[in-house]
Amino acid sequence: MSFMPTKYIVVLGSLMSGLGKGVVTSSILKMLDFYDYNVYPVKFDGYLNYDCGTMNPYRHGEVFVLDDKSEVDMDFGIYERFLDKSLTGDLSITGGKLFSSVIDKERKGDYLGEDVQIIPHLTREIGEKVEEIAERNKADVLIIEVGGTVGDIENSYFIEAMRQFSIYHEVVFINLTYVPSIDVVGEQKTKPAQIGFRLLLQAGIMPRYVICRSEAELLEKTRKKLALFANLGIERIIDDSDRKTLYELPLHLMKQDLDKMLIKDLGLEDRRINEAKLLQWKEKVDRIIKPKGKVTIAIVGKYTGLKDSYASVKEALIHAGAQNDSEVDIRWMESEDFEEGSDYSKLSDVDGLIVPGGFGKRGTEGMINAIRYARENRIPYLGICFGMQMMVVEFARNVCKMDGANSQEFDPDSKYQVIHLLDSQKGVREKGGTMRLGAERCLLVGEDTIAYRSYRSNGVEERHRHRYEYNNAYRSALEGAGLRTTGLTSDKKLVEFVEWTGQFGVATQGHPELKSRLVAPAPLFVSLVGAALVRHQEGRK
Image (cartoon, rainbow, N blue to C red; front, side):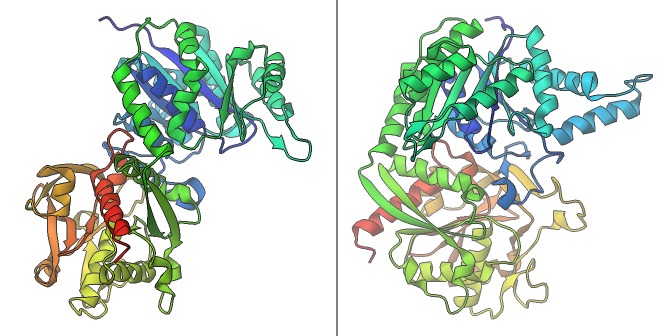
């Protein structure tokens, strides 16, 4: 089959951030994926960071890591979870990357004699990058999500670049906007959306669809009014009201024929929908909406004040719940609340515990105390990256009686540095892109382990993002006391998985949540939820 010219969809948000452009973009990707079109996302972020690696999760949310070691915006996690496709870092275009590229070209003399400007040099750079991505991936459709909101200085040059791009390519612009309901008035208000339309028109862009975020479904009169002001047919005003699960949105958009209209507008090859793929998705969504069981899982972390910091952990639990036909009630707990003298009774009625990734000393003692409570009370436990390191520290202190055992990161003078800095990290000075990153293969040890029963394979591959590791000097002592090593790096030099003997407690230095998808849930999360269901059914005994 010959490669047809790529078609493009650009998703722009107006009025306010946080409307869910990533979910809308992912839902459109999924709709077209149901027809087996080769689709890819591109994300533009206006910040001048080169990538997301050095960003604070409280400001930006989770840093998502790809197989190729790229540290990208958390929306890439949504794309992968919907598409069930591993993506690459070149699909992330930041202001930092763009300006770096243009300045590098200027220094090399590529613009010799020209005064380098936003227009045409930067906007042309954007268009060329988008074209390169389309060609490299032989994409039928690229869906470009523009971060920020229309009217921001940070993304204005990218919006202008897309306007220019649409002169030479088939581009459909979609505007995501907000339609609030004011209780006092008792109606849906369209004025904010109208203001958003005007900003887009001022930028020279006429959207072909308006997708409306709202609490309740759009009323017919609301759609008519929006259609009038947007110069569109009423069928192109699309409802995006609250759903029980974000994974329902592609199906909701298809009920409004958005898939059929887009295929026609883009002039795509006419295809039948892949019924098997659609049915699999519907079955998973039904299990989330109408589960048979329910378990409570506590997440004891350092950044629970902003739940987006652990977006992939949350979604992996939803996927695992669907696999186990169970609702997962997530109980968010700040690790500092478990410092010495704290009340641990709040953990007494949970069915499972997760300690996720993190950086820095704050809250670590609380994590260690929560892990000890789980071990002593036989609560199923899953430790992720930092959660594995704290599991090792807890076991060293309280089972092996290594008084003051700690990570070298927090106590360089500790007699028992059971967690220490990777050799490859010694001498590293720059922060960006210098950790142990990306997908790496691991060998599981033995078949009578939680890890092997979860993955059903001797070799697994998970993504990493860390600088510190289990110190092999203490491995023999900890194993002798009951902390099994159940996974090693392929060269057998670094510990990747550890487990408690005789109960459900497993931890990994990797981040299995990053590869969890609705149709292919993370095996360790599936096992944790399964163990939590058993505990719940037994009355948490």
